[in-house]
Amino acid sequence: MSLPDVRDRLQGVAVGAALGDAFGMPLEFRPPRPADSMVRNLTPGRLDAGSFTDDTEMALALAESLLVKSPLDGDDLAERFVDWYRRGPSDIGIQTAGVLGAVSRGEGWQQAVSEAQRANPESAGNGSVMRCWPVALKWWNDPLHLMVDSAFQSMVTHPHPDCVAGSCFINVWIEALINGRSKRDSFEFALKTIEMEEGLRSVIAAAPIRKRREMKNSGWVRHTLETVAWAVLTTDSYAEAVIQAANLGNDADTGAAVTGAVAGAAYGISGIPPDWRAGLHGEWPLGSGKILRADDFIKLALKLAVD
Image 1 (tube, rainbow, N blue to C red):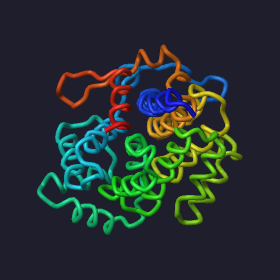
Image 2 (image 1 turned 90 degrees about the horizontal axis):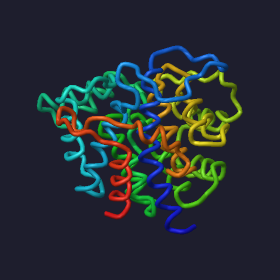
Image 3 (image 1 turned 45 degrees about the vertical axis):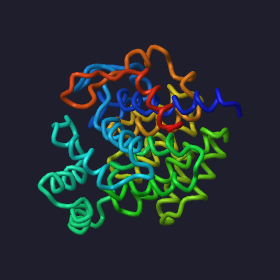
Image 4 (image 1 turned 180 degrees about the vertical axis):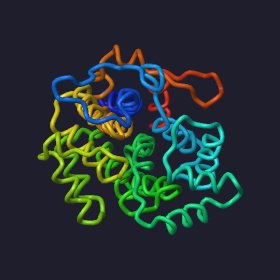
């Protein structure tokens, strides 16, 4: 595969993830849309049309940490997450808020995450999978560091084995796509490569043959991984994959964000509709007044990939 192909896919991951997030935003917490009346364009919701949410904001914090500390440094990453938390994001997951709130009050992140998991040992939300894609861009040609940092970024807030395995699975899938494997081959490679509980593996493996009505698309990490596998492997374009994921409703922005990252790797930025790219925007850092657009995500992708 040529270098331009790699660049196209790298850019596709970053823009694709943010756009998936923005596409799903107005459909979050809503029931699934009927198959014959699905939303097919960026639309307004609690934010303006094309606005990304906490999924992308946390990914940006992770990306910035990777640019100054690679391999990842937990203290630096936790500090960046806490800075975001203190700026008052419009949405934040329960587990993430609990951990970052404790760190904000002076606890070390290791103690905070340990206490949060001990209090809710079965907590396995999708908060680390939704943000994991910058690791795949940073280590797209270094499988060992990709695995280590994919797991580590999850451990800072979401140490449940399913969350750790899910982050590794998504990033190995993305990495294999960037390096030219087909959608199906890269999916099977990631599923075979990552150590995970057999129940999780069965859920992911069965997803492409399940019916739309069976997709729950909740905040549970297993449901998110199921959504992504189903949406990417039952469609033939970036746009259709994101449309299908987002219109499942419920945790629509996260399901579509992770789908967008994987589909962006599969089809490249050249496969993302130009009018969607033109509509993407969001403030970062929160409260700064600085608006990021698709070109900023393109620059970020390339910077991550070469630094």
